[in-house]
Amino acid sequence: MSFSASQLFDLSGRVVLVTGGGTGLGKIFTKTYVENGASKVFITGRRIDKLKETADEINSLGHSGVVVPIVGDVASKDGIKDLIRDINAATDTLDILVNNAGILSPVESPRTGASIDELESPEEYATRVAEGNYDGWVDSVKINSIAPYFLTIGLLPLLAAAAKKGEGRGNVIVVTSIAGLSYSTPMPASYQSSKAAAISVTKGLSTRLSPYGVRVNSVAPGIFPTDMSGGLLSEKLKQTIPMQKFGEPEEIAGLVLYLSSKAGSYSHGTNHVIDGGRLLTVPAS
Ligand SMILES: NC(=O)c1ccc[n+]([C@@H]2O[C@H](COP(=O)([O-])OP(=O)(O)OC[C@H]3O[C@@H](n4cnc5c(N)ncnc54)[C@H](OP(=O)(O)O)[C@@H]3O)[C@@H](O)[C@H]2O)c1
Image 1 (tube, protein in one colour):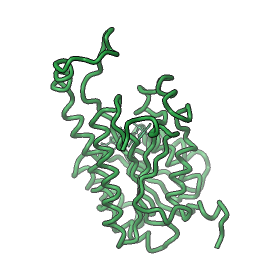
Image 2 (cartoon, protein in one colour; image 1 turned 135 degrees about the horizontal axis):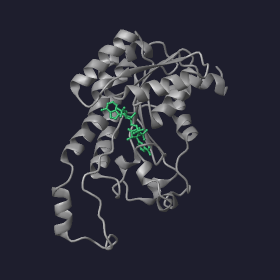
Image 3 (cartoon, rainbow, N blue to C red; image 1 turned 45 degrees about the horizontal axis):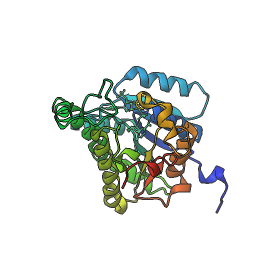
Image 4 (cartoon, rainbow, N blue to C red; image 1 turned 180 degrees about the vertical axis):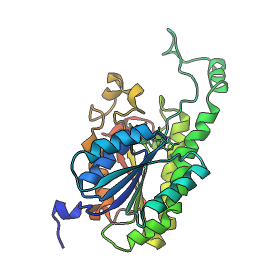
């Protein structure tokens, strides 16, 4: 038995799939896995150029592990089936699956004009929602909450085989959000509700996959600068966070490394909030 960090957090030889691994948080996770010994990290997304750019960048750093781009779209059942087929063709084991791909799709158009801080009339609000983005909400549900369920169970044979080898192998992480636990604007209701569903899906997967030895947890980030959050990053927002700053890459890398390794191997069915205390300040459950 060893309590040294190098043994507890070691990911030597692990095979990983990170959806949305070409950008933002997914790219941080991919780098974290390769830097801690993973032998292969498959990254997926719709844009091959982004995937290749990330793979080339990390592969040029001289680590023993390799990043492998695979184009995939998790917004439909057929897209998920294709991805499952491609992963099965590329590996006979999967130690870690990170369901990270996600979208944030505004519903109603933002309010504009001088009276923006005043309560709008019921008629104005009703009109903005009536003209709002219904299909974007449907896409949010498909990508943020349905895809993790179909993809995880589709890959269960590979995950269950890995779990038999112990040391925390055969584990799944779903990237949810504190938006799934809170009800405040400016986060769109489509995002909040699809992320709340993702938290529920994580717990539902954890009970269903326990008999196979597969662990399932979720990570609920607060605000980390990425393409998705870029439009929200104001000084005013930063001041609402008790730690008075947005999240930094190392601060989420550590949590994902913990959950993926022997160190976190008794964690199962839990939503891990990492938000600098932001949930303390917003209407939340
Ligand atoms: N940044 C934050 O502050 C924050 C906070 C809480 C939660 N999150 C969550 O963290 C995850 C990563 O987001 P991010 O902030 O890193 O933003 P991001 O850079 O926009 O990443 C989203 C990723 O998802 C992929 N994706 C989107 N739709 C897809 C689809 N239909 N099929 C396959 N891949 C798809 C995108 O790749 P393609 O466009 O190439 O497909 C992209 O790589 C998301 O689930 C997000 O909700 C982020």
